Amino acid sequence: MDYLVVAVVAGLAAVERRGFLQAMLSRPVALAPILGLALGDLRGGLLLGPPLELLWLGAMNMGAALPPNEALGTAAIAGGAILAGRLLGTGVTPAVAVLAVAMAGALAALGRTTDRAIEEWNVRLAARAEALIARGSPNAAVRENLVGLLPPFLVSALLAPAVAALAAWVIPAILRDLPSASVPLGWGWTALVGLAAAAGARAFRSARGIGLFAGAAAVTVAVGWIVGGAR
Image 1 (tube, helix red, strand yellow):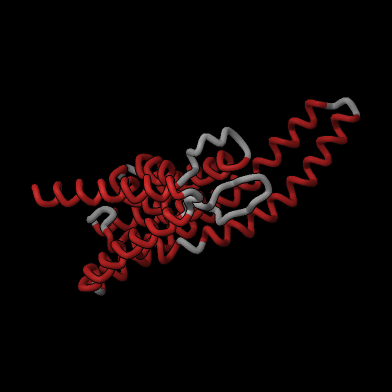
Image 2 (tube, rainbow, N blue to C red; image 1 turned 180 degrees about the vertical axis):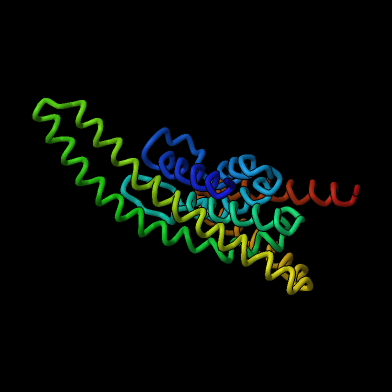
């Protein structure tokens, strides 16, 4: 049932990302918490969402551009991490999170290849829709549009749960056999978050944007320091 949830959420995110609505719900900062909530671990989704968003902040769908498929990568990472954390009984820890990114992050790059194939398919569908409209069959042309939404849904609904299942199987095995690895893997998560912040800063195209980013980062660090000291 959990993998069906991952499949449905990933498929809907793929459709929302380029073909319908485009309300940014497929962005990592929204998608990871949504998937976490659907799987019963909102905290895990909230832990994963912001760093993944920063990591892929520049991966925007603009015109014909085909960036890495951040929605597909996020669904696989979040699904794998949350299910692995459940099997371990720890939830999504930094060690679980960094292993999930290492195992499933490459799926975003693979998603760019599948996006290209889907775009070529949609070009043919668009030509058929135009021909149907010219022949006076607008309802048939609308159906062509609906057919075009099916491939991205199916690709994400198949790939995301498959990779999440692999991560949910491998990650607990690693952490159970090598419990001492949790500490250095936690450092790896900290490094990954720093890398994501740098990638997010690099995505800004104005000096003002970089200044705002740096100011927000400083406030976040200060709040984290105060909260951590209070505990």
